[in-house]
Image (cartoon, rainbow, N blue to C red; front, side, top):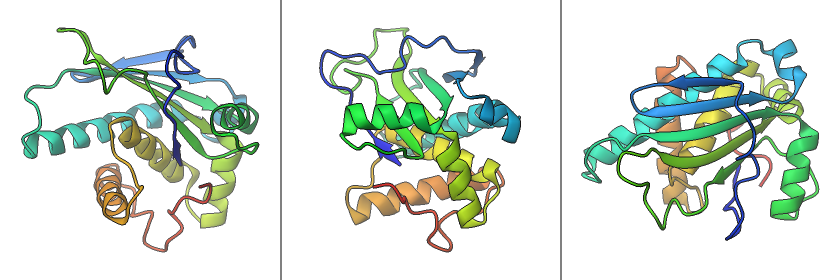
Length: 203
């Protein structure tokens, strides 16, 4: 599970992708683009699951921020999710991380979200989440988990990265995992870290 900061002066790699589905809640707009037919074949509900998982992660992070006294009302936000294959994510991983291999998920925060807030009345552009089918499916099998559950975990993990969470230190990792577990529980998904198999295998 990896988070990438788009280099200065460059847009996130998926910003020109036209979403094939858009859901609008009171707080979050989610565009989902399915670029690999493998998702529809193995997990027909992938699009709907991604919408639910992204919104659940956003709501949880927003609630935590309000509870900690950070900020006032909900500014609203937009995120793009791409359901891709290993080839696309390997190309992105090679270009942006210098690693010529596939990974399960990549998160690309939008350039400038930390430096310049969205104009009044405009939603915050969070960035892009790209999930690779073959790697995700293989991990689900290897970890003995339903593909749908593992997929939702990756979406939640990617969303939390876009919202500023990270796992660079033990304290940060523990806090992020705790929030992931809470969000997934709300989606009726068991703790992915119970047996240690929820840890990232790609970093």
